Image (cartoon, rainbow, N blue to C red; front, side, top):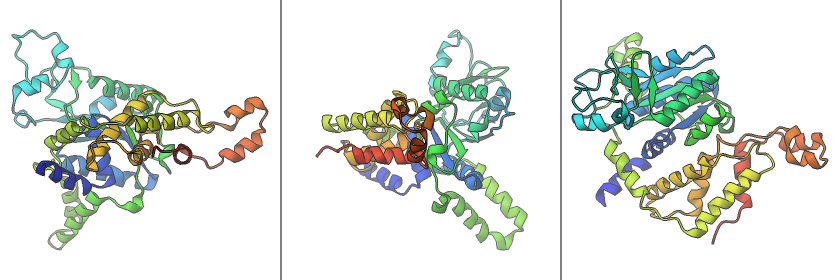
Length: 372
């Protein structure tokens, strides 16, 4: 009980970005994080600090553009790893980290370490970073985005010399520039595979980045401006040996989430909201069924964070806003269903003007009656 209270105390002190990353790590899923274009670089630095300081995980940044090739992407997500610096001291644990490792066709007598060409580390002693931040992933070519989808599905990627497998703690964050969360999208199937979406308002600040600059300002009297900038960069890159949230904390919340119960009335309420979202006149193309699975996962994680072992309608409201934000695409006026029965296009355009995914979600939440 004391451990649970300590964990909840830590979680309640997290920022919105830290909480989003924590929920994804608990569920072994991935997310889209967006912010206005002017704040995207600060968002990347904040997420990098969250990975290294809050969770003690290695981090790689991929700058995507239409010119990014598959080889560029594959090389960008790899980090050099010292043979003596491993997260796990157990060779058995390293051997079992990947499902695909056991299927690589290696005989039991073959001597394998983390840096062999067919092992998780690859030939050159490199490995996939625990956290990958893909800046402007929506600008990458369709081929690169499909490669990302394969990485998330199979947790491995092929390079010219090896098969790289993702570590046990693995988080892929698509960091996108958008004026609202509902405008942040990637390729259709990849978009549906992301667990949650979060839009960060720059006015809310960047807690870890601000703290790093404050520490640098305190040391400014003993250093030049160039040295200060270097110290901030080094702090960003260094992986903390004593992170705020450990792998054990992540496992603890995962265990608590498996014990959460969902009442049949609340389950019916969930399904009603999902149905109304799919049938909303402003939604184009419906919503993939995997979203329902993700909704259930998130609800079961949110309950323990509120000291509950059951799901409430209020938690459903929270989860719906995160699960469906990036999945809703607003229909064009010409394709709105009432056009089939003689509606005027000008009237439909006026109705849909300014409507975003956030508006659709709020409309449905207000429309569907919650259980008493």
